[in-house]
Length: 415
Ligand SMILES: Cc1ncc(COP(=O)(O)O)c(C=O)c1O
Image 1: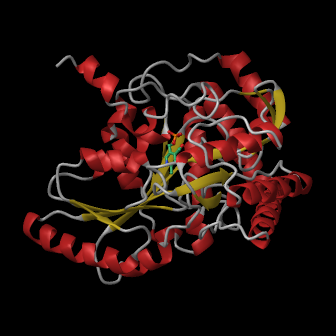
Image 2: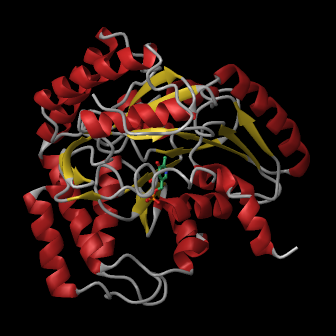
């Protein structure tokens, strides 16, 4: 069979929805300045789907630092991979500042979070080792685990009892192979908003020998007294052996980093293939990240505002009877029962008639009969934005309960 023929039949879990209105649910275009109110399909919508947690994306000082660095350096410099010809004093400065902030001996920059995580996992384990990881891990972890040649065991999301069982299985294997155990979880899970049970996992270190890798993409900047992340929040930063986060969320940019003890990070500099065989971060991204980190550290009011909005939104929605699952972070999932058609009609009604833009999360990310509308509050939303949104959600919930959205097709519904 021609492999292209097969692609016409099997479009994949997400590709099967490609027939949905074009550029509407999939690949929508949000236009205008990055802000709570943006343009969608020619009109203004209140936007709740950007991971711009601290509002840094459009902060005047950030915009200026990005623009100045682009004017001074362009996007090309430095050329090549970091190891060959792509290093600079700014790359080193950013790594040192990040290491100090997250309280780790050393940090290595990564040019993308997804490739970074995948490749870190690939670099630190070999076929003798066993990986034990949370079932709701981000795709970059799952794909990193896929590269692993040895055994891997998955534990149900945040189920510590089961994790312990998997550790016991892993121990038996490494006793034979002479390898070690790597446990992987997240600081904040980006869909449910749950925090990883890092305290409980850290406590298991007393009885089992393993190293812990935490992907804190959604926790860095949002959690912890200083914003240093979920390890700081839960008082277990020292127990996180490999701390990862991306610049794609709170830092509102591109790039990522990994921190740990010096010997491990030095090892990674020579073994993480996604960095050795790919171009380094260009200067505007590095200088821009230094500015973002400075603001994150010196303007605690950004995190303060974020949490004001988070608390108002989450308590308001809960008071109105909405199911937000078990979120403990800014990630705000609103869960409903219903099928894909209902989800689409409801999200469309919200966009068309209430001017609320949020992301719709569907199977396979959530079970088949669950609709999740995911809201991401930011430091630049206001309490009026929250109020308007809760009113809109209350109105569409009434329609959902009345069966208004139960249609085969997704169609525009008038208010
Ligand atoms: C938990 C988690 N890990 C890793 C990534 C990937 O990071 P990046 O966008 O820098 O590739 C994301 C999404 O951006 C994420 O949500």
